[in-house]
Image 1 (cartoon, rainbow, N blue to C red):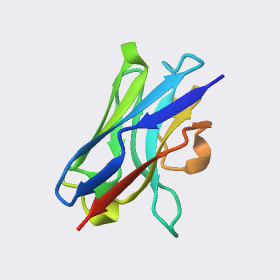
Image 2 (tube, rainbow, N blue to C red):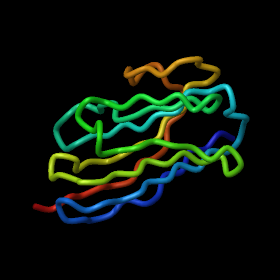
Image 3 (cartoon, rainbow, N blue to C red):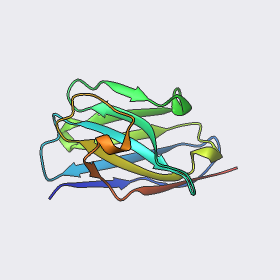
Length: 125
């Protein structure tokens, strides 16, 4: 059974940092594209950052460039999202996603095949 389990969310003040983790299990993800999305209350889910397991190519959304960094640890089957200089507008549920055998990173929600349950990030002003 494929599972993506996020952790690391919480409440933080503006300007603070958090590191989210996504533990993947149930299949081999080495050929997949992985991504973080977020969804704020009343808004659609939006792409935050993506990474390819093989090669480590990354891509960040413009809203988080220079502040967020996505990385992966192949040995631990884990993808991370380091979030610095957090702003209140970064508040939302952050979810991890995997695109089965997908060779590139996409910003589209429908591109990804597996999703985690999400972890809440709240940034206070």
